[in-house]
Amino acid sequence: MALGIAEELAMQDFKASASFVYKFKKRHHIVSRKVTRRTVKCTAEDLAVQKERAETFKNEVRAVLKTVDHNKVFNTDQSGIQLELRGGRTLAFQGIKNVEALVQRISSTTHSLTIQPVITASGKLQLPMLVCFREPKPPKKFASEMEEFKYLKCVHSKCGMMTSALFIDWLNRVFIPNGGKESVLLLDSWTGYKKPMEESGREVEFMVIPEKMTGELQPLDIFFNRQFKAFLRRMIEVLMREKPDYIVSC
Image (cartoon, rainbow, N blue to C red; front, side):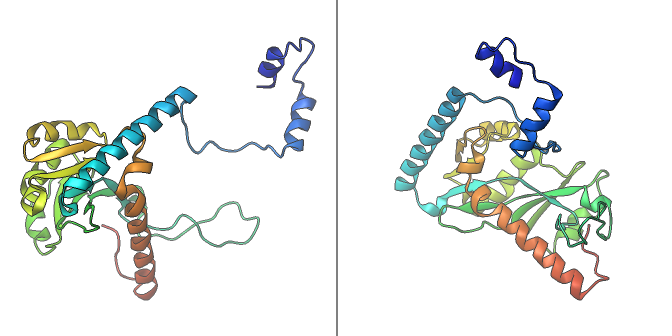
């Protein structure tokens, strides 16, 4: 980076020596850190286009909310939840490099299920809520074992993630019969939604949130998913403290 700037300023005699780099880093408190997230270069033009798309989408939604009952405007989103949801931080003595935490099953902290909540513009949670479990081999008694959970629509896939076919089935069996007919449904740009939108386009009006803007525009991302996981994590922590032998993982 220093050499690039020197070239732009026509500093032909400049050399980024080891001592220069060391002093520069020390002066500006720069240290070596592990990369936690990778991204791509985004130009000012890209940001401007994204902002324009976001504003256009907001205006379209505002227009819908002026003419459509808020109980008929929905947002749905997929969210992965670890089978054993635990916090990623704990207390330890200063200077300790390796910090261990006790869990019931290691595999349950690396595998997850998927929930697909639906909320209305009036703030109501549609029930039953879709839950997709991870089942590499289809269980024989899955349907009968899930019958008692009347507020959940339980399905399964090999990896615990939603598929286009499962979403189509949910649209026809759960969403539309429970108030979704002749409604507006906001969802993200996941490719698995394309086929369901084509097949159910007459009964449901779909509004696709611009790509890379769900963190700013999707109601569930802003007001529900993070808060729901925090509540669930807190509930598990209390349960494990009061009933240590209770199995919380699936």
